[in-house]
Length: 137
Image (cartoon, rainbow, N blue to C red):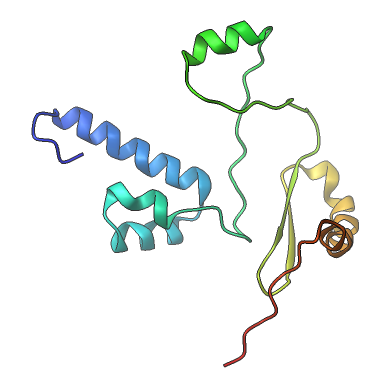
């Protein structure tokens, strides 16, 4: 980004894209500002990574009619795709100390949140995912 031959507009556009990407993974202004004050802009992606307890911003999917349409649009770039389900959406976070948070993104599932929260330990146990025990100094 410190390339001398790049225009100011290109440098600013690159900076905006770096910050937008970081914010999409850690949508917390506190965490983003702490990172911006502690690392160079080019390394922001190292400081702003997915964090238990901070929900990821929902992404909007674009429907497509064929795989060829996707391949043409992405022009040789590597990608991952998944079905887009409409309806209820939530993220389940378990912090390293074992605290479970269910973040719901629609009002219609609030009654299901406590049930989902109660099922997290069982799911983690079945998957072999256990939180680290708290460290006491």
